[in-house]
Image (cartoon, rainbow, N blue to C red):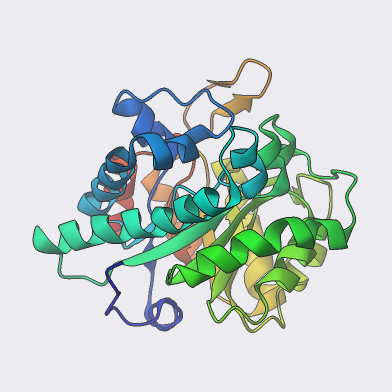
Length: 305
């Protein structure tokens, strides 16, 4: 694995705005890869790793400063369902960080002189189920059960040496509590990002309650929202900044809605780079896009910030 000589991501957030990448899945699909499998983009970690590197490189080339790894839906349980054993699953998790590092190396070789970082994606329990439940939460599991699910993957990803862990698309404040317990002592900073609907988490908790959990967790360097409608972002930023005092991370979807039954996107795009200024003014310091937000939109954000 190629090490990173960039300054710490937390230091960069204190100094200014950092640009995240966009959706991994839509970039892979745009390149012709079929992702209907339950492992989603994580399947390509085993089958087409070069495609993952190329997707990361497309975002670095567009102006992203941070690549989020293709490990969102990569879990020991999910790999086991495909006959992949624990040792190989761990190797694939580590490779997700290495592939992003390789993309950063290529971007630097092509002339990128700005700092480039890698954040290891840690998706919610519902992502492993691959049934859309990450947009509902409330899985019927205890906090301890959720922590036991997340901790082994967190340990492997932290051991791969990312610049941060991206605890992302978390629908439920209860699951966030388990993740916050899980990152303690790993020695890697993390951000916590909820998926929300209106002014509440997907599970229905108010923002104040959800964000407050991270306020005193030293490992958490940013708190915010992702995989939500662009219109839900600004209020969430204001609350997260006020409640936690930490930099805020935002990377919404394009504005289209995911139909879990049909496994397809519906509606129209409402994401626009012109919204970024309002998010930044409200306290956002780590800004990018999630599902259906591609390199062109990330390039627009990079030009603005």
